Image 1 (cartoon, rainbow, N blue to C red):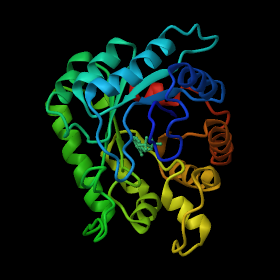
Image 2 (image 1 turned 135 degrees about the vertical axis):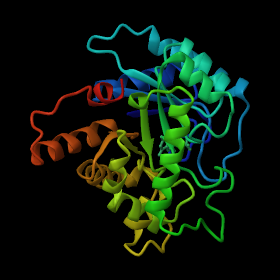
Image 3 (image 1 turned 45 degrees about the vertical axis):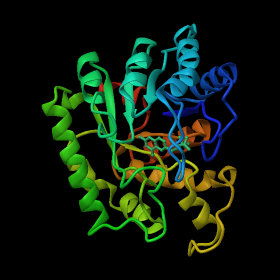
Image 4 (image 1 turned 90 degrees about the horizontal axis):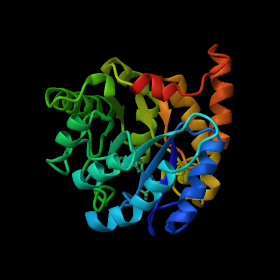
Amino acid sequence: MGVVNVTPDSFSDGGEYLDAGDAIAHALTLVAEGADILDVGGESTRPGAEPVSGEEELRRVLPVLEGIAATDWISTPPQVSIDTSKAAVARAAIAAGASIVNDVSALRADPGMVGVVAESGVDCCLMHMLGEPRTMQREGGPQYKDVVDDVKAFLEERLSFAVSAGIPEQRIVLDPGIGFGKTLEHNLVLLARLDELTSLGCPLLVGTSRKSFLGRLIADGAGEREPVSPEERLPGTIATNVLAYERGASLFRVHDVGPVSAALTVAAATLGSWPTTRGMARTQTS
Ligand code: HH2
């Protein structure tokens, strides 16, 4: 899953693809590099981010979704995912060709979202987050009894909520929400014990790409110094995605599709799933 952030303030690529033409060109590059899914978002969820209105979010993402839908693909067209927590944005994005709703609030932020997903028959990703983006990493910090057990219980509850509201289980992907209301240690424990989430029965998505815990570890193994810049976090992105794959993840939300895709191909071959097949996400979620 390649990230297409149409925002001025995303933590690693804010402002780079705010122009629709630049975002569409970037989306084509990500597909050429191996992305099966394009995740288009018009609102940053970085710690401290201020919310934007639905109108503004749509103004950013709609031209990009329309440009992707109008593309004459040489090979299999990518699936398009809309990264939003707003029902109105999801509805318009689906009309413009999106077939996945990636809701970092797991259907909690907007009471209309569950109905939009259920009625339109699209796939959806339900992610764990403690708190909300504006405040989730504040001093005093996120607290869990056992981070894996707590995240698992949350995802189980969200899954049964979604299914009871009419979203078929086969259309649901679950995500532990790396970096969303978690300390460095919480992120590492979740990745190390990711296999414990596979018993929930849904494909697992992970999003570690360029996140600050990687920057802190690369700067200094104890995670105590200033993090290295997002561009210098690729080795950590690759390491965590390969480990997540080995522990059962099947969708990988990343900015650097080419290098991560190559690393995952080698990991899959090493673990005995060679030759690897593209379109893995599509067959598992639809
Ligand atoms: N992470 C980000 C945004 N959306 N969705 C899912 N399902 N999982 C994630 O881990 C996830 C996500 C944050 O990354 P990015 O989009 O690059 O940054 P920003 O929110 O600042 O735009």
